Length: 378
Image (cartoon, rainbow, N blue to C red; front, side, top):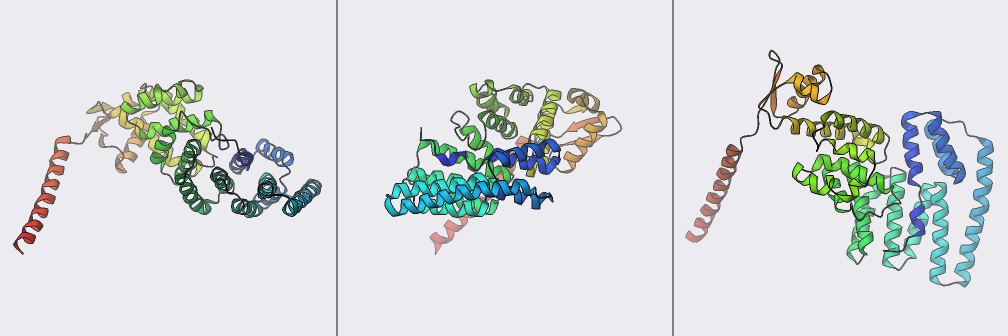
């Protein structure tokens, strides 16, 4: 296992999650939690940024206290760096720059954090430590929703890993990449990365392990077939050892459709103000519902709307509305008979599909033979 880097502690991702929750709720409780973190970490630049964003009145007493504290600490760090450059070796200089970067990361100064991390990278020789700096830069981009910066950082991290990054950092990079894919709505690709690291997760600088398992199972419901979901998720030791919220997500696999809808409500509540999932949450929930409807309808050719509604514990009108919407958008291969109150499924004709594929292959072969004939006769 690679050595834990001091950089792993900052920026504090949980504070960014608090900001996202407050952005949505504007509740006094969420504001109080945010302010407690700001004061305990002396985050003056971050606080002033929030005052602008949320049109808060600046608390001048708090501002003065944080200014005095930040100024005193910063003066000591600059003096230490100057003294180190004068009398110490390269590794001591690197550590002094790192301490300065950690200060700016802790107080939430975006620009200075970027500047000092760039300087730290320039003064770092060891490959593993370089990767740790890039990981920190990636977290900084998450913290401040700086998605444009992330792509170049991801490319940089992948290049460093290929140069000889250790196994643990390679696995941690999969989590960073997976979260970025979630931001970009590529949940299937993210799922593959998360599932591959389910038993080797160590990226606790991003989230707790329980949270990671929850996210992995949510995406696995969307991406895996029933044949794969059983061994990879339902019977996985890591999933079985997780809490009740994770077990609720297994209800679709166990054909408990009403329980699954309850689990989707939990997913929506949990991710509605999430750094990585909130942006495309409505799309994710919609696709997770389609997954359930597809599974439920698969054994039937004809089914009463009322029977389906009963299984999902929703109204007939809701199911009919959902079916019409997803049929229209070609998410479900079925049709509704309003008069009889039934759903008629139209399973794809596998034989016809195979015939079309064979014909297509034959056309390609004929074209190639014609080209070969022209070459031989030339």
